[in-house]
Image (cartoon, rainbow over all chains, first blue to last red; front, side):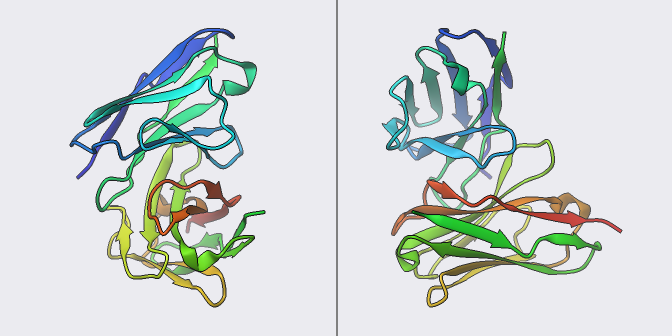
Length: 107
Length: 120
């Protein structure tokens, strides 16, 4: 079974910081990876797909990289609107497993 | 604009069944794969199931395999989730979400969710 592991689970940061979240897959998934942002009480929002392709309308301060089993989501300069929980999701074969989430909160 | 609206949630007893619906509008429903994703209170996202745009393929998460069935009626622009043998672990907000055109990949549109509570 596919497992997706995100780190860290919680990240405290300040406005303007560069933030990096890591997602590791238990098996190679090529670049079949997406990143989502979720705010409290809201549905998730797709940020990035195919590991590094920015969804339309998503600010360019968000970027994704990686392939195989290790991936990163980077926010180049954290903005007040970015405090949220972030999830990775693989879509490589017969499952669409999410990571456990990374909460980005205010330092 | 794309709209997804789930319904059918409620409070049910353990061991019983429930069927969720999701009505879609604002896009050609029959061209898109569709997902169900759930989120237990205070917990992370859990993928439940996906169905191809034409219903030809369906995949399920391990925790619901054999108990839940995803289906769709393209003539009615409606997605379904039949849930059987419910337990307390199935208590969650259930989201309907749209994948890409002729895709079963990431979900770029989501409904507001419908809450299922399994309790005696």
